[in-house]
Image: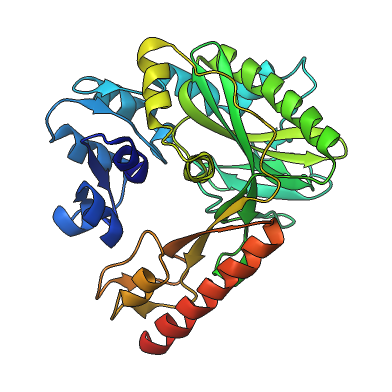
Length: 367
């Protein structure tokens, strides 16, 4: 969001936990850990936001899980994004299941109470306040489902995301990205989100157009029933049986910057205009450049490390750069790498070269 605001020429303040080196170079930033000596929590983010002068506020992950905190923020700031009422509808699996009940779309079967009998097939345990795939794991026979968790049936298929813009009723589909999930080569595990590839570009152009139209239909239903505004994103599984909605992310998502780089524009002005004036731009041309692909990979620490030098991240044009002397625990994000190539395969090769170079430097001087 800081990059998007900077690209659009807005004067803005960013508030987050990490206060990464490149963000602090780019924009005025308030970091919970560096500037306020506070732990990461949604509550602490909101408290920090309540301490700055009143203004227009755009929120990102994971505040969509805390509608009561959005209400608190709205007592001081003008929220450019979804209201607490929209969040409650969009983040409720039960509500979404009911909305999609009479459509061609579905949500994987979910159990919010301990089953009387052992469920058949493969199931996942998911946190109710989910985000980035963190905490999702395979359900094992007779495993206890803890408070704040639920069971969801596992669905095999391609994991995709769709970014769209809405004005509370109408919407505009902006792009479909392929998700990178649990990529061990990037230090991720389980179902942890590790980036996106844009555009999702299957070989069959007619198949792509059919899926585009189906997703457009899905986001129209969601936008109208939830009253979504601004930039939003959905995660879904695509397989031979259809489109299976996993979740709605009713806020500025991590895949937005890929679309911005691909189309060469900031989407933040579109978000603001949709929220403030209820105006959507003209349709985008879905005939994507066949020789252009952009990949974003989140690199996670494979062991506990201490950053003794940030130069390697600068040399390799990484983003979300840690500061010198930062301690990064195993499994925590270390940096983000974005690269462009002609094809998906070329992008994966290019980005792997950067990943190897970072690993070679970080783990040698971090040990």
